[in-house]
Image (cartoon, rainbow over all chains, first blue to last red; front, side, top):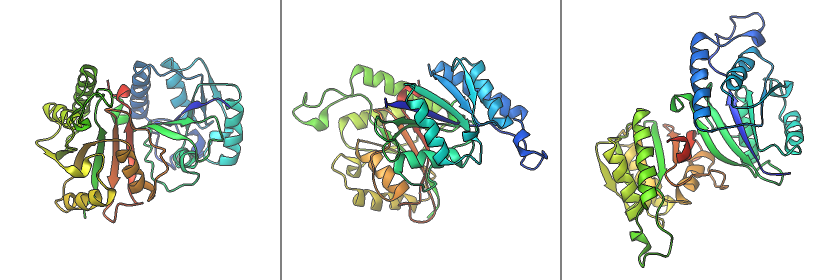
Length: 165
Length: 165
């Protein structure tokens, strides 16, 4: 498999947990829209470009992914259940390998905590210790090597949104 | 000990290794000065403020620390051999604890690779795996908890300089 840059992006600020009967439908707040749009603009100004944006099916994630697409960070967006809060690491890794085999160079994934930071730790360390702080609308950048990514990946970027405004 | 934010900053781009009889005197290049000054300005624009900047005694590190001071990121700068390339983690940790006992809130340390990223890994995971990529003039931000920092710290920031311009 070729090496790949993987950008894990947490959804923006959403309404309070419990305010929607179905938590999957909880949307971004006005502030969440505003800050996430600023983050997307800054990522574009930094010349970031993804082959595709892949997102969790939950509303707050899809809205975040839409803002990234609007900022022209990728030519397309795809929704995948593997990125939902109940997605398993095993399922996610199998799915990631299918993208690697397509020779993508840079993938952006929009999803949820604690999954994103724990999956990143598994790629970096082969296990988790909850040491990576990924804020809402924050970004985490990993390089996956040609070999198996678990325990062999490296971290080149981790930023809260306040440093992207 | 109170919690503390620790910013590890790698010196900027310097001349080729081997171009100076004494490697400790190797200075930043013109490009190194320019990019490091831009990084310092951006850190100031992001409202970062350190209680003090502590630097390795090597010229390329001291010049980097001087640019941070010029950008008003801290009221003072101090030179310490513990941050030199041959500084030991043991010596460095003892010295760090003395700063923690002074109730500093945010320390900036200017030093060298691979020391900075390996020391960060020791604080995060209790051991090293060389997974953190810290570029010249890049920044790494850790939060040290009240308890012993080894294996208990968290990472909130890691950025190459190209995302700070």
